[in-house]
Image 1 (cartoon, rainbow, N blue to C red):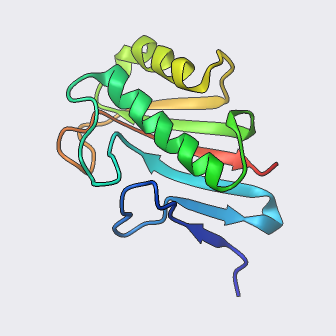
Image 2 (image 1 turned 90 degrees about the vertical axis):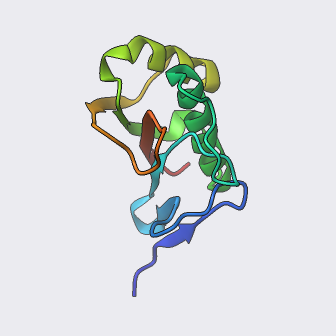
Length: 131
């Protein structure tokens, strides 16, 4: 039997077909599913503004971190999927604004042709070392 813990914080949108946070206590790790610019009612946040969508996705990551008692410093890896990979300066500025720091974990930005919900421009997933 697995010791993993599946979490869907109530402050986040429904997770159809996935779990927002999976904690692997024995490994001391948590995996955050890709977070996007959706509010708890599944409404798109930020319109066509990549910076605003990035901030909304990062706020959802913060909600997930809070649910497991972790902080930005506990994020060791981040993967970003975006329709606008060459706008990395916009993405970086929005991330730094939300996390309140210029410190970044290991990261990959991947250009994609689309995301799961029409209108989304960015999705950010993270690997966390549990505090």
